[in-house]
Amino acid sequence: MASVSSPFKRALLPASKKKRGSYNCGRCGAPKKGHVCTLTGTGTGTGLGLGSSPRPGPAPRSRSRLRLRLMRALSFDAPPGPHEDGDDDEEQQEAEADEEQDDEDHHLSEHQHELVGVGSAGLVPLTSLVQVFRRVPLKALFAAAAVCRGWRHCVKRMWRSAEELSICVSRISITFLDSILQKCTALLRLTLRMQSDVNSTLLGCIAFFCPKLQVLEITLTAGAVNKINGVGLSRFVAEMRCLSVLKIEGCTNLEYISLSSTSLSILWLSDLACLSKSVFNCPNMTELSLDFTREGNDSTDLPALMENLGRTCLKLRNLHVASIWLCNEAVLALASADLRFLQMLSLLLGSRITDAAVASIVQSYLNLELLDLSGSSITDRGIGMICQAYPHTLSRLLLALCPNITTSGVQLATSLPYLQLLDCGMSISTAHPQTEEKEMHCIEETDSLRKRQQFSNIKKPYQKLIIKHPNLKRLSLWGCSALEGLYVNCPELEDLNLNSCANLHPEKLLLQCPILEKVHASGCQDMLIGAIRNQVLNEFAAARLDWPCKRLADRSSKRVLVPSMFPYVGTSDEEQKGKRLRLGQCAVHSY
Image 1 (tube, rainbow, N blue to C red):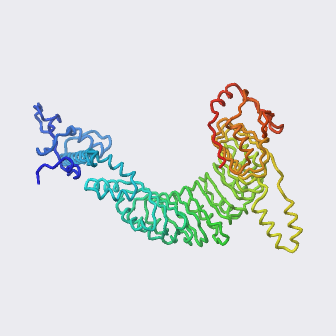
Image 2: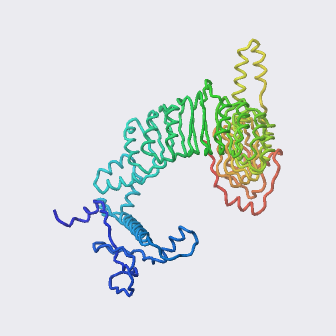
Image 3: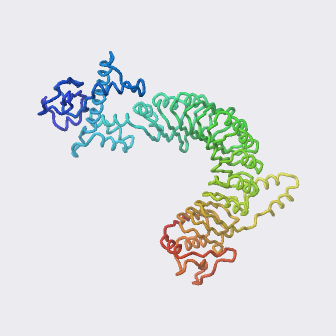
C-alpha cells in the first residue's frame, strides 16, 4: 500500500487527534519565524516539541498579574502581598489548564474544517453533511450510515449531538426504538406518535437511555392502545430528574395517579377514567390539563382532586379540567384551594356548574386572564358577575354550549375593555342536548303526553345580536341557529366564525371590520355566503364606501339601505383610503 493515500480516501477517514505545539516565543509571545527575542527573563511558555503545526497561542501572563488574580479570588479586594511559597506550583497548574483548553478548541476547529467525500460532488465540510443528515428520514439515515466510513462517522456524530427527536413508531419499527434512543445521549425533547400499543416498558427504556430528557410527548393514532398503568407512570416521573414537560394521550388504564417531581412544570393527561387516587406532589408545576372520558361510568372524586392541588401545586397558573361530572362542589373545593398564581381556568362540560360556582370563582381568583366555562349552565347573571370581577385582566372568555345564555349576556360580555377572544358557539341555538334529554325523560313518565307537549312548545325565538368592541380580535358564533340578525363593528377583528348559522338572514347581516382576515361560513345558506363575500371582499363595491348599502339577494341591480335595526356609523376620508387598500385580503371559508 502506498504511503500517501488519495484525497478521497483521506476524506473518508476521521481526522486523528494530534496534540500540536505552538511556534510562538515563550518570552514575548510573538511568532518565532524570523524573530529575535530581546527579553532576557524566562517566560512561562509551554515548551512543546517541534512536531506541531503553527497556530496562534495565548500571550503569556506575568507573575504579578497571575498572583494578583489569585489573591483577589481568595481575599476579594485585598492588596497584593509578598511572594509566598507555593505560588510557582499554582502558576504551573493554571498554565497547564490553559494549554489543555487551547488544545481542545483547536481540536474542535479541526473537526469543523474536516472534509468528507460525497461521490462525484467532491468533498464537503463535515458540519454541512451533518446538517443534511438531520433532514433525512429515519430509514434513509440508516442506509446512509452503511455507505462508507466517513458517512457512518457523520451519522454517529449527528446522533450524539441530537437534542430533539420526533418518530412515528409502528408495529415493525418499535424494535428499533431502543437502538435509536441508545445513540442519542444528549436528547432533550422526544415526540412519539404511536401506531402500536404502548406500555410501561417504553417509559422504562426512555428513562434508562435518556436520563437528561426534558420534554416527552406521546400521541396515539387510530387503533393504538395506551396500556401504561399508574405504577409505571409514577416510577418514570420519579426517576426523570430533568423532566419538565409530559404529555400523554389515552390514559385509560392508569387507575390512580401519584406523581412526585420537583422538575415537572407542565403535565397533560387525556382520556382519564375512574381514578381511585390522584396526588400531584409537584411544587414547581405551572400548567395542568386533565381530560376525562365522556363515558358515564367515571367515578373520579373531583372535589378531593381539587383540594389536593391547593396543598401540593401552589405555583399552578394554568388549570384545565374537562369532565361531565364537574359540579358546584368541585368548583367550591377549587376556590378553597387558594391558588394565588392562577391566571387561566378552564372547566369544560360541567352541566351542573351554575351561577353559584361563578360567584365562588370571582371571589377567590381576581387575576384571571382566561376563563372557559363551556358546557356549563350559567346564565346572563353569571356573565354580569364575570364582567364586574375582571374589568382589567380578562382577555379571553369562552362560553360555548351554554344553553341558558341569551344575546343580552353576549352583549354584556363585550363590556370587558381588554377582551380579545369571545366564543359563544352553540349557546344561542334553537335546540340543545339538555333539552333533548328532558324530552326523553318526559316520555318515560306516566303523564308523558302532557309534559312532552310542554317541552316541545318551549323554543327560543330568533334573536338579533349587536357586537361593538374596539379590541376584539376573534369572535366565534358557530352553531348559533337562533340568530337571525347580526351587526359586528370591531375595528381589530381578524377571525370570525359563523359556521352552521343556518337561520341568519343575508339582509340582516352587517360586518364593519376593516382588517378582517378569515370568515368561516360552513353550513350556511348560499345567499348568506354571497352576502358575506359582498361585504368583506367588496366584489360589488360602490363609489362611496361609507354608506351601509347592500345589493338585494335577487338578480336586480337595486341597492338598499341597511335595516333600521343597525345604527349608521360614518367613516372619515383616511378610513376610506385604508379600506380600499385592504380590499381582497380576507378569506371566506365555506367548505
